[in-house]
Amino acid sequence: MIGAIGNKSPAAPAFRVGDERLIKVTTNAAKKVNALLTKQGRPNGVLRVAVVGGGCSGLQYKMDLQDNPANRDILVESSGIKIVVDPKSALYVTGSELDFVDALQDGGFKVKNPNAAASCSCGESFSA
Image (tube, rainbow, N blue to C red; front, side, top):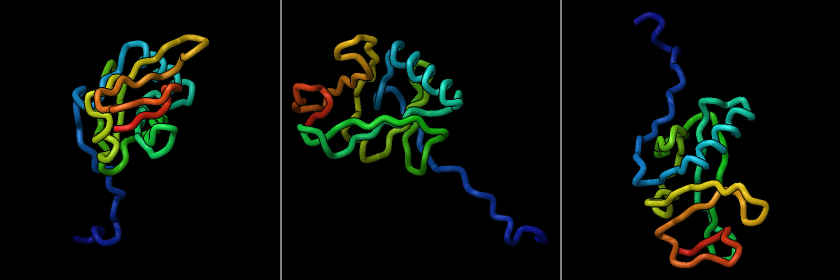
């Protein structure tokens, strides 16, 4: 019992593991995410996909590179990369596919979301 008091090690984040039914990543998107993670010095990092209020249709996607999942996240591995989604965003992205289009016009990450009831003409926001 000696030494047990005061030796609280920080707990690892409590996250769940999901599968590609939540979100799937194409090969093109996986290559781009891997390149970005490597460039940032996070070869074992994760891509956070979130849905936040805003945009001309009411909801928009937010993506960020992070070191690890956070508490309550859902972790999905797809095409060799790790994606994390918070439980609230999971309600909106279930069944989605993340792609990357390398083009001068309309290039970048694209989310094909079967839950989107409508999207705006710019393609950056949606409503559910």
